Image 1 (cartoon, one colour):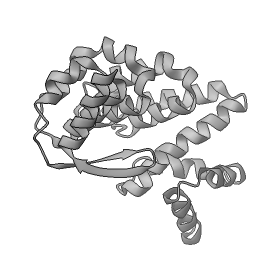
Image 2 (cartoon, one colour):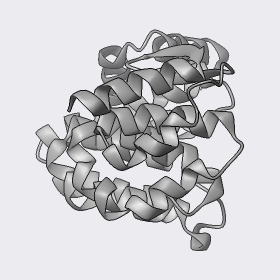
Image 3 (cartoon, helix red, strand yellow):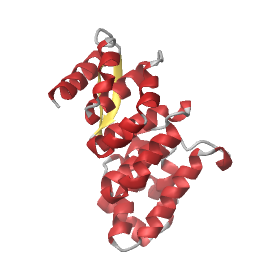
Image 4 (cartoon, helix red, strand yellow):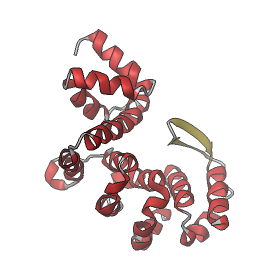
Length: 218
């Protein structure tokens, strides 16, 4: 990929123009490798749209009858999390969740597996929480099953984990999280979360109050 092609690719990612990226991918399969590499970009304005782009492409594969191809790719994401991979797939939980959101039929078994593989791994906890929030009520049963491990994330001093946990528990309307959220209501430190295609930065207290309101209304 030359400089001009790279610029075009990154521009389309940042604009979240997934239709155009899919069109480019169908013309040049090297685009798929570039998207996969971008899952681990330091630049968040590249990394997060790349996660979304993978979900978009997986949906196109699925609808074209390539279900096993999709499942094989999801298996590579899980493999990237394991010690055997030789690294850590720190965007894998988010990517798996995004794929499931595009193909809801895959919630069983991959939603539960996403939590099982990631919730105990410190580098993956934030991605796991984001995945839970992204999946929302699709993953309620799995969140309940892993309740003790998920609530353990509140035993931290990491403000970003608090924010992600608050948002995620609100999206799932997870009542057992309420006592933990109550303790965070006075913290005003800002937390940035990628939600619905944009970065939202708000005080932790705002994320918490919104989550509590959602849970109590449910």
